[in-house]
Amino acid sequence: MKKLLHRAALAATLLITPLAVWAQDLSEIVSAQLLPGWRSADGTHMAGLEIRLAPGWKTYWRAPGDAGIPPRFDWRASRNLAGAQIHWPVPQRVDQGGMITIGYSGTVVLPLRLTPARAGRDITLAGYVNLGVCEDVCIPVDLKLSATLPSAATTRDPRIAAALANRPDTAAEAGVQDVSCTLAPGKNGALKITAKMRLNPTGREEMAVIETDNPRVWVAPATTHRSGRTLTAETEMMHVDGSSFALNRQGIRITVLGASKMVDIKGCPAG
Image 1: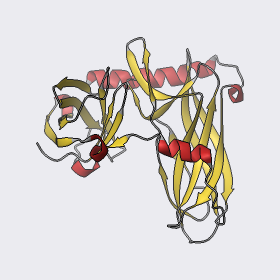
Image 2 (image 1 turned 90 degrees about the vertical axis):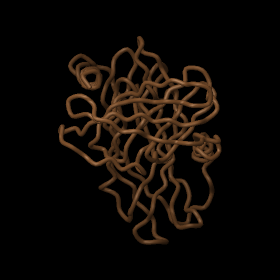
Image 3 (image 1 turned 180 degrees about the vertical axis):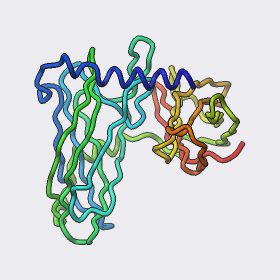
């Protein structure tokens, strides 16, 4: 758990310290726009958030790895919006002096599946996106975005469609079997979790990322090892307030990243 707290403190330091010394126009480093997308037959609207990064810069996936912060989205200024779901394309792994981070470089499109509050009406998507962007230093960036998404739009945007296609395999597609999680008390009030699953190798430098559906639960980077078809991932988690918490096993999400494949596993029953 001390290692977890150290990594979190390091990430915060990397993201805050450069503000006092960085003078470059942030628009030269990162820019973003909303792609209006199209209204689907089921009444939801598929839009996209396009992020462009200068050469050498990167931003983070929803679980950033050993250091960094995940993107944060605030769409409360929107109109006619009942819900928003992000579809994350397959990210890249970067080794930063022995610390593994997970994210994107160049141009990335995050597909947004939006549910209108009133069917058949336009959606005004408006709000803020908070990103950590890194090169040799890391900088927190707040981007203000707004766009009208017409209910009459039906033409699929190839940029959004390509990002939707660049997704992880589901557990069923990857042939995952016998997923289980064992829980045990950890140190300093932490909860230790050991996840086991059977699946074929996903490539060299295989790693697993474990997440929960509770944003107030802090999960340490997992240690991962394989024996034949069995992959084991171990980590610790704790509530950010240090208090006890109930773990929803159906809300556990395990993402296996290898050099040749990424697999998304949802739910982890008792072992």
